[in-house]
Image (tube, rainbow, N blue to C red; front, top):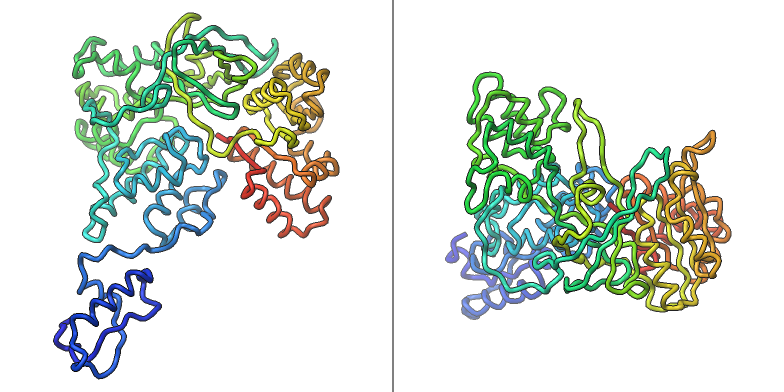
Amino acid sequence: MSLQTRIPVVPVLPDSAPFTGEQRAWLNGFFAAILSADQVSAPTALSAGDAAALMPDMPAPAAEAEDDGAPWHDPAMPLAERMALAEGKALPRRMMAAMAQQDCGQCGYVCETYAKALADGAESKLNLCAPGGKETLRMLKQLAEETTTPAAKPAAAPAPSAAVSYAHEPHAPAALGTRENPGEVTFLGRTRLNKDGSEKETWHIEFDLAGSGIDYVAGDSFGVFPVNDPDLVAAVLSALHAPPDFPIADKTLGEVLSREVCLKSAPDALFTLISYITGGDRKAKARALASGEDPDGDAATLDVLAALEKFPGIRPDPEALVECLEPLQPRLYSISSSPTATPGKLTLTVDAVRYEQTGRTRLGVASTFLGGRIAPGTRLKAYIQKAHGFALPADLSKDVIMVGPGTGIAPFRSFLHERLATKAPGRNWLFFGHQKRDTDFFYEDELSGLQARGTLTRLDTAWSRDGAGKVYVQDKIRAAGPELWAWLAAGAHFYICGDAKRMAKDVEAAMVAVAAEHGGLSAEAAARFVADLKTAGRYQADVY
């Protein structure tokens, strides 16, 4: 726009222009000030584009307020649906939609604050969302490219590679016992919770916190820095045809593969590297895998070792390979002990993950580290991840309803021991479920003792493999509908811990059904009732 062509009139931005009220007032005042009043015949509207052209230094308007309710914030919703709901939103909101929606804290944030930190340039690492995996990382890389366009605000920095870096940026010292400054705890031992005949391997894990600087409350999570399985490390070294003492900066290749990098899902960057050192059809295949395609239908099974074995004969430079791998992230577990009942001690309830895939046993890196590879007396780095909206009510007289099948019982064991130690007068109701009562009834004796002492008011159990039909905790919730509704009507707080994609969704549906049937609400009103419980902090979830 040429200013001279508009000089007879004062441009006035319409209310519909995509600027804030403050920006609109500033612009209107600016135009009024630079134009002489005796040259003015009448106000006229100015386009948003013209205004932006005249004021290139004016801060860009916010595309939207962040009070949209984040309708994509559902861990059971597929990524494509989440991104569709966030389409047209500001960059931080779309980045939030790309997250796994679990608010698990493994990234050091919750989904919303991690997204904002990335969009603002305050956080450079795009690969911190462990539950989101490759899917989230790919989408974040795509979204981060927007921060390098001319229209992006200056504060946003270009997204760096997700590769491992051995350069350390200076930062203010973090408090001891946090992810940035972990403390050292002592591993005391493990006790298997399943009896003979169980299909699962679940461990009660104990730590001594003496000298660690770690302090926690019921509801917090415990972050463990694991070590990769030595047999897997040896197999990767063999596939690389490289010795374990090959130097990588001030470490050896064996040390880096053991403690620094993730050997689980093969990252896109690894396939890009492979495409550079192979040719023909193999080059095309590696490029396809790097772009998220699945040419052989096996992409989901390719960890780092399987990726190297898929392209036999390649000899990638070990340092180049390490730069392509993702950092080995700490793993978070719900704490199953009470700091009031057992000060200085901390326990976890951990399923050891083992499964067969493509003719090889795959291991959960941290779960098998804790469940078998670490010896009692070992010191290891750990930290506390403070709970985000998952805590006992401050009013000890409030009733508490807890739903925790499998290892989801962990925080509720903590809650029950805390309620006992603090002599909380509120009632406590636990729903617990697993496969078989005879082999998988975790902490059965403890729970019986808590019932005998009056701390555990009611215990409902569900066993999915004991009868002709499978019974789950959500079935028990529906069956207990009348009394459950009475507890909720009296102000009870409701908690759930466990699988985010299936169990938590089914439990919420059961809660809506209870509200409709026993609260006399319509389906819409029942859904709003559960949503209002969440808003009020009376429906809290710790899901993974």
